Amino acid sequence: MMDHQPEKIIELQNICFAYQGEIALRYISFDVNRGEAVILQGPNGCGKSTLIHLLNGIVFPEEGTYRFEGHEISEKTMKDSSFSKKFHQKIGYVFQNPDVQLFCASVEEEIAFGPLQMGLDDAEVRRRTDDVIRITGLEKLRERAPYHLSGGEKKKTALACVLSVNPEVLILDEPLAGLDRRTQDWLTAFLQKLKAAGKTMVIATHDEALAKKLGDRFIIFDEDHRASEQMPGGS
Image (cartoon, rainbow, N blue to C red; front, side, top):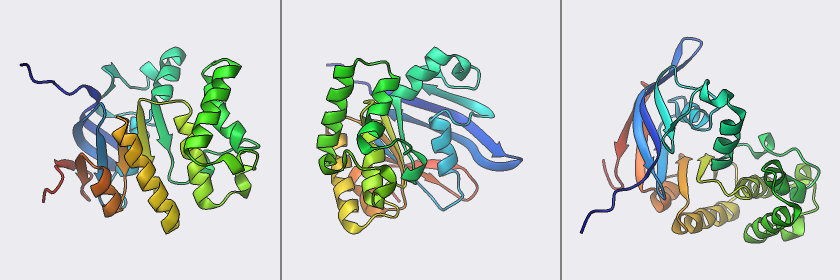
């Protein structure tokens, strides 16, 4: 019987990036396979957030190659509006600060925004919106203005907005930061369910408990802006 080869969804090869001459990423290379949860760890300022921006097509490598589902992601390829739109539908980014993501008049409108931008018909937009509101427990908040929500409620809403587009990959930057223990526990359990359902995830976190519960592989950054892979339980 032939061994089943994992399907690479993200491929990074010798990625380098600098902000105004200050090195942020130095020769970063690793892959993410479909269905994996990959954890990014390391001290503040080591390059994790820069890498997340790169994975989301916000910044682009100065050296090296980033491929998503076999397609190179670069400033040139992302100028193709059709390609860019499809890419951003496949990558779901939950920011550390949910206020950055929320701008509509109600929770329901926030969640419906992504499917509407995809050009889905009204019935499908409604179905997706209702489904995501249900699974994230936002039923009582659907008419609430986002700026009236608590921090945990905003985080749930930001996650719901991303999930309504049903991305191939979910990328989260410090998902538990600033949340109370109850919301942290809820979000950890929710992400475990997404992982069990086969969702591919890349998560930057300082939270060791979350990393151990979700991580299949760990990419550890150092203060020199390099990174090395570590398997669960590795030293």
